Length: 497
Ligand code: SF4
Ligand code: SF4
Image 1 (cartoon, protein in one colour):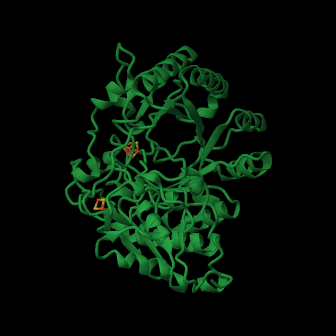
Image 2 (tube, rainbow, N blue to C red):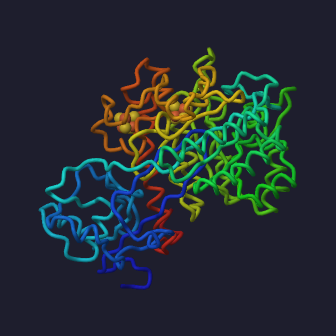
Image 3 (spheres, protein in one colour):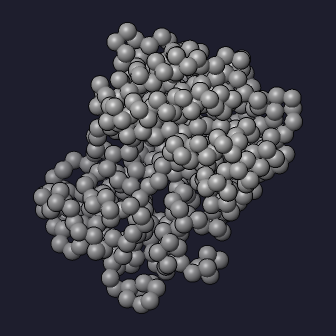
């Protein structure tokens, strides 16, 4: 092998361990296809030396290339990106030697070289006598949106909350937490993720502190792992709040829809003034100096779609995690702020060029495209299975966008019973006409079900953004390929030109 690894005769596989990004919705669960040494994948790693798992050693002897693998051939130095539809953790970048080995499996044969086991662990090779199917897995995390308040100091035109001064009383919040942990325990979840939201949740920071502290105690008592995140417009946070969040392992997600007036016209205050300068102050003068790295979420509408590149650059230059999300029209709203399809694709491509120029080392693929998650999933979100929304009155809803459909919690305290019988049916991407054979089905999982229904009147069809997904997914995957090459030192700056 030469110093850079380029032109190596040894097979090389580059993989990344996925990092979760925050957004409004509930992430679906991402089952692992095969058992692998977790430590081998905690960070980006080159795979050839990885020990094959015991599970692979005990599986049938003949393997073949999995069908519908995605191949990206335009990476530098004859590297290629491969993605199995059933990939446990996203795409793999292979050099020419590993590619040649994979080609070998056009004809069934046993795994014999170390690289064979790595390819099989990435679901790029599949046992010939095992039907190819998405693996079932146990749900691990119960995600709960706690709708702390209807109130907000901003007046964003796309907001789906009917504003009022109503907010959660402490006893309602405490009762909700008890029911959440009771539900998680009864249903066998291993962790609970609480999202404090509204309205603007930080208007009631005292309540957030109280609830988060009680949640920590309940998690200890019930043996659950706990994640907590505050979803905020970022305008009201003070240094004390940030320090408390850091001390208590409470994360922060901030909405930022552009720079300057682009953000201001999409996220004005209730008196019509801009909010960008305040968000910038909180980020640059309070959060970042204290060591807090908030997740940034951008909502893309017809008002900002051609300015996404600027905000992406601003965020990436500050090394913050970023998620690009498409506007969803509330069911009750007449106005539609969705960007026109082709214009949205062009705006996203401009943003992707910034990613390509800066190529941050941290995994970013999960944030590149609305609802798209690497690590296969059957559903676009956890609605109906591992997600629930609790209103300020303690009622239960399936999704934060249909708060008005919330109903009282059931007598037996199992909150998931309510969401499993709700308006949004639990339909997997495999049950969607037009999605079932799509090679991207386990990445986009058919998109937001509620938005699909609102725009088509059906739950069982591809998302209206399907063409956008198909146009942008190859480009997003290519960016991940370039990132993996850069992280592992196989990409010189000149390669990007
Ligand atoms: S919505 Fe489109 S891209 Fe997504 S799985 Fe369905 S057909 Fe494929
Ligand atoms: S139904 Fe749509 S808006 Fe609601 S949680 Fe799922 S993806 Fe998000």
